[in-house]
Image 1: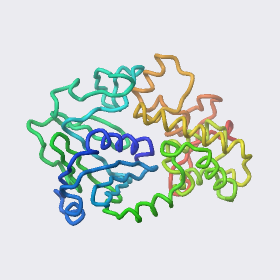
Image 2: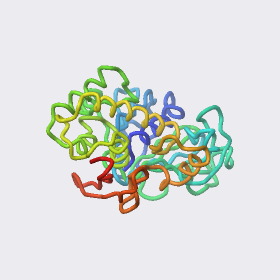
Image 3: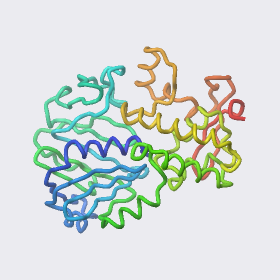
Image 4: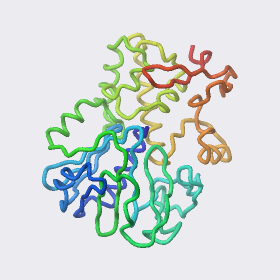
Length: 323
Protein backbone atom coordinates (compact mmCIF):
# COMPACT_ATOMS: atom_id res chain seq x y z
CA UNK A 1 0.00 0.00 0.00
CA UNK A 2 1.33 3.47 -0.86
CA UNK A 3 2.49 5.25 2.30
CA UNK A 4 2.42 8.96 3.04
CA UNK A 5 5.43 9.98 0.95
CA UNK A 6 3.93 8.50 -2.22
CA UNK A 7 0.66 10.38 -1.84
CA UNK A 8 2.49 13.66 -1.23
CA UNK A 9 4.47 13.09 -4.42
CA UNK A 10 1.28 12.43 -6.38
CA UNK A 11 -0.28 15.59 -4.98
CA UNK A 12 2.84 17.44 -6.13
CA UNK A 13 2.29 16.24 -9.70
CA UNK A 14 -1.23 17.64 -9.58
CA UNK A 15 0.00 20.88 -8.06
CA UNK A 16 2.64 21.26 -10.76
CA UNK A 17 0.58 20.31 -13.80
CA UNK A 18 -3.15 20.57 -13.04
CA UNK A 19 -3.75 23.30 -10.48
CA UNK A 20 -4.86 26.45 -12.25
CA UNK A 21 -6.07 24.58 -15.33
CA UNK A 22 -9.52 23.60 -16.56
CA UNK A 23 -9.87 19.84 -16.27
CA UNK A 24 -11.94 17.46 -18.39
CA UNK A 25 -13.07 14.64 -16.10
CA UNK A 26 -14.39 11.31 -17.33
CA UNK A 27 -14.76 7.71 -16.20
CA UNK A 28 -13.63 5.38 -19.01
CA UNK A 29 -14.57 2.40 -16.84
CA UNK A 30 -17.98 3.92 -16.14
CA UNK A 31 -18.07 3.34 -12.38
CA UNK A 32 -17.40 7.01 -11.58
CA UNK A 33 -19.47 8.59 -14.36
CA UNK A 34 -21.73 10.59 -12.04
CA UNK A 35 -18.84 11.91 -9.97
CA UNK A 36 -16.84 12.82 -13.07
CA UNK A 37 -19.78 14.87 -14.38
CA UNK A 38 -19.74 16.95 -11.18
CA UNK A 39 -16.17 18.16 -11.74
CA UNK A 40 -15.93 18.00 -15.54
CA UNK A 41 -14.84 21.30 -17.08
CA UNK A 42 -13.99 22.89 -13.75
CA UNK A 43 -10.70 24.52 -12.82
CA UNK A 44 -8.56 22.68 -10.27
CA UNK A 45 -7.47 25.11 -7.58
CA UNK A 46 -5.70 22.99 -4.97
CA UNK A 47 -4.12 19.56 -4.37
CA UNK A 48 -3.63 18.35 -0.79
CA UNK A 49 -2.24 15.13 0.65
CA UNK A 50 -2.98 14.19 4.26
CA UNK A 51 -1.36 10.91 5.17
CA UNK A 52 -2.58 8.33 2.66
CA UNK A 53 -5.54 10.44 1.53
CA UNK A 54 -5.53 12.97 -1.33
CA UNK A 55 -7.97 15.81 -1.99
CA UNK A 56 -8.25 17.78 -5.25
CA UNK A 57 -10.27 21.00 -5.02
CA UNK A 58 -12.24 22.46 -7.92
CA UNK A 59 -13.68 25.92 -8.45
CA UNK A 60 -17.28 24.83 -7.82
CA UNK A 61 -16.59 24.08 -4.13
CA UNK A 62 -16.33 20.34 -4.79
CA UNK A 63 -13.38 18.07 -4.08
CA UNK A 64 -12.22 14.77 -5.54
CA UNK A 65 -11.16 12.50 -2.68
CA UNK A 66 -8.92 9.50 -3.45
CA UNK A 67 -7.46 6.80 -1.23
CA UNK A 68 -5.33 4.41 -3.29
CA UNK A 69 -5.50 1.50 -0.87
CA UNK A 70 -3.66 -1.71 -1.73
CA UNK A 71 -4.08 -1.68 -5.50
CA UNK A 72 -4.63 1.92 -6.57
CA UNK A 73 -2.27 3.85 -8.83
CA UNK A 74 -2.17 7.05 -10.87
CA UNK A 75 -0.70 7.04 -14.38
CA UNK A 76 0.51 10.44 -15.60
CA UNK A 77 1.40 11.28 -19.19
CA UNK A 78 2.07 14.38 -21.26
CA UNK A 79 3.76 17.49 -19.92
CA UNK A 80 4.86 15.99 -16.61
CA UNK A 81 7.98 15.53 -14.54
CA UNK A 82 9.57 12.54 -12.88
CA UNK A 83 9.62 14.49 -9.66
CA UNK A 84 11.96 14.36 -6.68
CA UNK A 85 14.97 12.49 -7.99
CA UNK A 86 18.26 13.44 -6.36
CA UNK A 87 21.75 14.17 -7.57
CA UNK A 88 23.16 11.48 -5.28
CA UNK A 89 21.08 8.81 -7.02
CA UNK A 90 22.14 10.01 -10.47
CA UNK A 91 18.58 10.61 -11.57
CA UNK A 92 17.39 7.07 -10.84
CA UNK A 93 13.60 6.98 -10.62
CA UNK A 94 12.03 4.32 -8.45
CA UNK A 95 12.81 0.76 -9.44
CA UNK A 96 13.00 1.42 -13.17
CA UNK A 97 16.74 1.93 -13.51
CA UNK A 98 15.96 4.82 -15.90
CA UNK A 99 18.34 7.74 -15.90
CA UNK A 100 17.57 11.36 -16.61
CA UNK A 101 19.09 14.78 -16.21
CA UNK A 102 18.49 16.15 -12.75
CA UNK A 103 17.40 19.78 -12.66
CA UNK A 104 18.11 21.45 -9.33
CA UNK A 105 17.46 19.09 -6.44
CA UNK A 106 14.37 17.32 -7.68
CA UNK A 107 12.80 18.23 -11.01
CA UNK A 108 13.47 15.78 -13.83
CA UNK A 109 11.53 16.24 -17.05
CA UNK A 110 10.35 13.10 -18.80
CA UNK A 111 11.54 14.74 -22.01
CA UNK A 112 15.07 13.88 -20.87
CA UNK A 113 14.36 10.16 -21.14
CA UNK A 114 12.28 10.13 -24.29
CA UNK A 115 10.17 12.35 -26.48
CA UNK A 116 7.72 14.55 -24.56
CA UNK A 117 4.28 13.00 -24.07
CA UNK A 118 5.53 9.56 -25.11
CA UNK A 119 5.85 7.75 -21.76
CA UNK A 120 3.54 7.11 -18.83
CA UNK A 121 4.72 7.60 -15.25
CA UNK A 122 2.95 5.28 -12.83
CA UNK A 123 2.81 6.50 -9.24
CA UNK A 124 1.70 4.16 -6.47
CA UNK A 125 3.82 2.41 -3.82
CA UNK A 126 6.67 2.44 -6.31
CA UNK A 127 7.20 4.68 -9.34
CA UNK A 128 8.06 3.43 -12.80
CA UNK A 129 7.81 4.29 -16.44
CA UNK A 130 5.17 2.41 -18.36
CA UNK A 131 4.62 1.81 -22.06
CA UNK A 132 5.15 4.48 -24.66
CA UNK A 133 2.39 5.82 -26.92
CA UNK A 134 2.18 7.66 -30.22
CA UNK A 135 -0.32 10.49 -29.76
CA UNK A 136 -1.68 12.61 -26.93
CA UNK A 137 -3.81 11.92 -25.05
CA UNK A 138 -3.06 8.19 -24.99
CA UNK A 139 -5.92 5.71 -24.93
CA UNK A 140 -6.93 4.57 -21.43
CA UNK A 141 -5.32 1.28 -20.45
CA UNK A 142 -7.21 -1.11 -18.22
CA UNK A 143 -10.10 -0.25 -15.90
CA UNK A 144 -9.56 3.50 -15.52
CA UNK A 145 -11.90 4.77 -12.81
CA UNK A 146 -11.17 8.46 -13.43
CA UNK A 147 -9.40 10.32 -16.21
CA UNK A 148 -8.38 13.94 -15.58
CA UNK A 149 -7.24 15.76 -18.71
CA UNK A 150 -5.86 19.20 -19.41
CA UNK A 151 -4.52 20.55 -22.68
CA UNK A 152 -1.06 19.14 -21.93
CA UNK A 153 -1.39 16.50 -19.20
CA UNK A 154 -3.48 13.44 -18.41
CA UNK A 155 -3.85 11.46 -15.18
CA UNK A 156 -5.58 8.07 -15.06
CA UNK A 157 -6.66 6.47 -11.79
CA UNK A 158 -7.07 2.71 -11.43
CA UNK A 159 -8.01 0.45 -8.53
CA UNK A 160 -8.53 2.91 -5.66
CA UNK A 161 -10.11 1.93 -2.35
CA UNK A 162 -11.97 5.25 -2.25
CA UNK A 163 -12.85 7.68 -5.01
CA UNK A 164 -15.66 10.15 -4.44
CA UNK A 165 -16.71 13.76 -4.81
CA UNK A 166 -17.11 15.62 -1.52
CA UNK A 167 -18.29 19.02 -0.33
CA UNK A 168 -15.86 21.24 1.58
CA UNK A 169 -17.43 20.39 4.95
CA UNK A 170 -17.14 16.67 4.22
CA UNK A 171 -13.47 17.10 3.32
CA UNK A 172 -12.81 18.96 6.56
CA UNK A 173 -14.56 16.26 8.58
CA UNK A 174 -12.42 13.59 6.96
CA UNK A 175 -9.21 15.56 7.56
CA UNK A 176 -10.24 16.18 11.17
CA UNK A 177 -10.57 12.41 11.67
CA UNK A 178 -6.94 11.89 10.68
CA UNK A 179 -3.91 12.25 12.88
CA UNK A 180 -1.27 14.91 12.19
CA UNK A 181 0.88 14.76 9.06
CA UNK A 182 4.27 16.46 9.53
CA UNK A 183 4.49 17.35 5.81
CA UNK A 184 1.26 19.29 6.16
CA UNK A 185 1.75 20.60 9.68
CA UNK A 186 5.13 20.50 11.39
CA UNK A 187 4.05 22.79 14.24
CA UNK A 188 4.51 22.16 17.95
CA UNK A 189 0.73 21.78 18.18
CA UNK A 190 0.78 18.89 15.71
CA UNK A 191 3.64 17.21 17.57
CA UNK A 192 1.86 17.64 20.92
CA UNK A 193 -1.31 16.15 19.45
CA UNK A 194 0.59 13.02 18.43
CA UNK A 195 2.32 12.78 21.82
CA UNK A 196 -0.97 13.09 23.71
CA UNK A 197 -2.67 10.46 21.54
CA UNK A 198 0.09 7.91 22.13
CA UNK A 199 0.63 8.51 25.86
CA UNK A 200 -3.02 8.07 26.80
CA UNK A 201 -3.57 4.72 25.08
CA UNK A 202 -2.94 1.17 26.38
CA UNK A 203 -2.56 0.03 22.77
CA UNK A 204 0.86 -1.33 21.69
CA UNK A 205 2.98 1.23 19.87
CA UNK A 206 3.26 -1.17 16.92
CA UNK A 207 -0.48 -0.72 16.37
CA UNK A 208 -0.64 2.97 17.26
CA UNK A 209 1.79 3.93 14.50
CA UNK A 210 -0.54 2.30 11.96
CA UNK A 211 -3.63 4.02 13.37
CA UNK A 212 -4.34 6.87 10.95
CA UNK A 213 -6.29 8.74 13.62
CA UNK A 214 -3.10 8.90 15.72
CA UNK A 215 -0.64 9.82 12.98
CA UNK A 216 -1.35 10.07 9.25
CA UNK A 217 0.75 8.39 6.59
CA UNK A 218 2.67 5.61 8.32
CA UNK A 219 2.29 2.18 6.75
CA UNK A 220 3.88 -1.21 7.21
CA UNK A 221 7.38 -0.27 6.01
CA UNK A 222 7.77 2.96 7.97
CA UNK A 223 6.20 1.36 11.06
CA UNK A 224 8.80 -1.40 11.22
CA UNK A 225 11.68 0.91 10.43
CA UNK A 226 10.72 3.64 12.89
CA UNK A 227 10.42 1.11 15.71
CA UNK A 228 13.81 -0.40 14.94
CA UNK A 229 15.50 2.98 14.64
CA UNK A 230 14.10 3.83 18.09
CA UNK A 231 15.02 0.33 19.39
CA UNK A 232 11.42 -0.01 20.58
CA UNK A 233 9.64 -3.25 21.30
CA UNK A 234 6.48 -3.05 19.15
CA UNK A 235 4.40 -4.55 21.97
CA UNK A 236 5.15 -1.73 24.44
CA UNK A 237 1.95 0.10 25.35
CA UNK A 238 1.74 3.74 24.35
CA UNK A 239 0.93 4.81 27.90
CA UNK A 240 4.10 3.08 29.17
CA UNK A 241 6.48 4.99 26.90
CA UNK A 242 8.54 7.95 28.15
CA UNK A 243 7.42 11.21 26.57
CA UNK A 244 10.89 11.91 25.19
CA UNK A 245 10.83 8.62 23.27
CA UNK A 246 7.49 9.45 21.69
CA UNK A 247 8.71 12.92 20.74
CA UNK A 248 11.78 11.36 19.15
CA UNK A 249 9.49 9.07 17.13
CA UNK A 250 7.60 12.08 15.76
CA UNK A 251 10.81 13.87 14.81
CA UNK A 252 12.20 10.75 13.14
CA UNK A 253 8.96 10.24 11.21
CA UNK A 254 9.11 13.85 10.05
CA UNK A 255 12.67 13.32 8.85
CA UNK A 256 12.02 10.02 7.06
CA UNK A 257 8.87 11.37 5.42
CA UNK A 258 10.76 14.34 3.98
CA UNK A 259 13.41 11.98 2.61
CA UNK A 260 10.71 9.83 1.05
CA UNK A 261 9.01 12.79 -0.61
CA UNK A 262 12.32 14.07 -1.95
CA UNK A 263 13.72 10.78 -3.25
CA UNK A 264 10.60 8.75 -3.96
CA UNK A 265 12.07 5.92 -1.88
CA UNK A 266 11.46 4.76 1.68
CA UNK A 267 15.13 5.17 2.55
CA UNK A 268 15.43 4.42 6.27
CA UNK A 269 19.12 3.62 6.74
CA UNK A 270 21.65 6.20 7.91
CA UNK A 271 25.40 6.58 7.68
CA UNK A 272 25.86 4.87 4.32
CA UNK A 273 28.85 5.47 2.09
CA UNK A 274 28.10 6.95 -1.31
CA UNK A 275 28.41 3.59 -3.03
CA UNK A 276 26.21 1.90 -0.39
CA UNK A 277 23.66 4.71 -0.68
CA UNK A 278 23.54 4.42 -4.46
CA UNK A 279 23.11 0.67 -4.11
CA UNK A 280 20.29 1.12 -1.62
CA UNK A 281 18.53 3.59 -3.90
CA UNK A 282 18.71 1.02 -6.69
CA UNK A 283 17.65 -2.00 -4.60
CA UNK A 284 14.80 -2.05 -2.12
CA UNK A 285 16.39 -4.99 -0.30
CA UNK A 286 19.33 -2.76 0.70
CA UNK A 287 17.21 0.16 1.87
CA UNK A 288 15.79 -1.02 5.20
CA UNK A 289 16.94 -2.20 8.60
CA UNK A 290 14.31 -4.87 9.28
CA UNK A 291 11.39 -4.63 6.85
CA UNK A 292 10.89 -7.78 4.76
CA UNK A 293 14.03 -9.33 6.29
CA UNK A 294 12.41 -12.27 8.10
CA UNK A 295 15.05 -14.87 9.00
CA UNK A 296 17.93 -12.69 7.83
CA UNK A 297 20.52 -11.47 10.36
CA UNK A 298 19.90 -8.12 12.02
CA UNK A 299 22.19 -5.54 10.43
CA UNK A 300 23.29 -4.46 13.92
CA UNK A 301 23.48 -7.56 16.14
CA UNK A 302 23.12 -10.53 13.79
CA UNK A 303 20.02 -11.95 15.48
CA UNK A 304 17.52 -13.31 12.91
CA UNK A 305 14.75 -10.83 12.19
CA UNK A 306 11.32 -12.17 13.10
CA UNK A 307 7.97 -11.58 11.46
CA UNK A 308 4.65 -11.76 13.24
CA UNK A 309 1.15 -10.73 12.27
CA UNK A 310 -0.07 -7.76 14.30
CA UNK A 311 -3.39 -6.15 13.50
CA UNK A 312 -3.67 -8.27 10.32
CA UNK A 313 -0.41 -6.82 8.99
CA UNK A 314 3.11 -8.27 8.97
CA UNK A 315 5.48 -6.75 11.49
CA UNK A 316 9.25 -7.23 11.24
CA UNK A 317 11.53 -6.63 14.22
CA UNK A 318 14.68 -7.67 16.04
CA UNK A 319 13.94 -9.41 19.33
CA UNK A 320 17.38 -8.51 20.70
CA UNK A 321 17.86 -4.87 19.73
CA UNK A 322 14.17 -4.14 20.35
CA UNK A 323 13.80 -6.24 23.48
